[in-house]
Amino acid sequence: MIEISGRKVSVIGAARSGMAAAIELKRRGAFVYLSDEKPESQWPQDKLNEIKLLLKENRIDHEFGGHSEKVYDSDLFVTSPGVPADSPVLQNAVSKGIKVISELELGFRLCPAMVVAITGSNGKTTTTSLVGEIFHQAGRKHAVAGNIGTPYCSVASTLGPNDFAILEVSSFQLEWVESFKPAVAAILNITPDHLDRHASMDEYVALKMRIFANQSENDTAVINADDPLLMARHLKDPVLFSISGEVAKGCFVGNDMINLCLGRERRPLLRVSELGIKGPHNLANACAAAAIAASAGIADDHIIKALQTFTGVEHRLEKVGLIGGVSFINDSKATNVDAVFWALQSVSPPIVLIAGGKDKGGDFKQLEPLVRKNVSAVVLIGQATEKIAAAFDGIVVVEKAKSLPQAVERAYELAKPRGTVLLSPGCASFDMFDNYEHRGRVFKETVRAMMEIHC
Image (cartoon, rainbow, N blue to C red):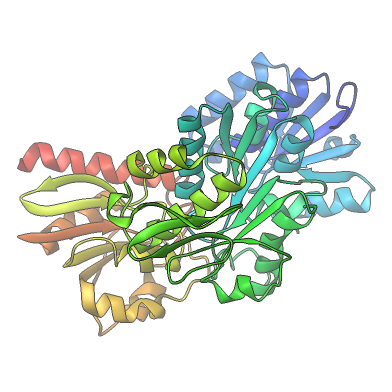
């Protein structure tokens, strides 16, 4: 826990995490100053109005358009995950002897609940949501928060010491942690991602591994036995999950069954065909969720029920509509190349792929075999258009669009009379949208408008 009342705290970043931290700090008696480098003119007007209303209601002093010297009149910085660790404002604070922590670290210090934390390059949102559904089936009081959309600080005051905070955690959130200590922590997989922000793959992996850094022998680390990079880290007595072979301790697929071996003899949970979520990546997510929940003490029957009834999350291989013989799938959550790799194996070909956005350093050439096999055309949007076009040149029909609605309309024409239009960008959304949710909503709104015309 941390004593907040009467302290001067500067919060850096006015997006969701920063606002949640500022409001919770103010509620607990801190003198809060919120600072964001983005000028007011660059914010969407409705979002800016919402933020300024909250700041006014909570009497939080603030500034936009840069970080003045006033921001350093504090003894604690709380930073949003969207602010890079090497940004001048944070490095200046460090040089002045001001402690810097992340919103994730602040939430941990304010919230007495036990923590289940889940990270990885792909599958975090689905697995975190599924773990939350398992806890719901078990009747255990919990909150699902973190990188999934609800900031940790927003739920810190709603949970007691016998409750659970189930957190999706990103590498950005782990940049400024100190004492963050999950009772159960999991890394689902590690593939190249966020290399536009992190200096190297080694740095990215090291940040992910920080989720285990403070765990004791009474805590549990859960990792993917099918990921050689994770298995090479030599963690002490981890719980494993695998879709390719039996594990001595954890959850695995064998004989077309999902099996659990944790604390007592191996026992089957359910058939793979009974899973509510489909695709090989979701089979891994389901095994991870079962291993995580069992490690947190949840009984098998609650795990089984949730695995059967949970059907997925918004913006992740989400079925949007059907026009004639063309189906539309929203996979806006696919913000890296590895996520596109799994998506191209999970929907029915022939596929017209809509991709692009803000490049994160991924290698689209690795998709070539799947593109040749399953994709009939690619429609590109955003800053990464030329890079992706070069990767697919001579492999498949490639077209470019100036907007997502234009891309959807063109993809439909290319897919007719039968096929799948798949939005699976493989890139961040920030060149054209507020976030991947905004991108997914625009896709769905466009498809629904087209359905009114064509259906």
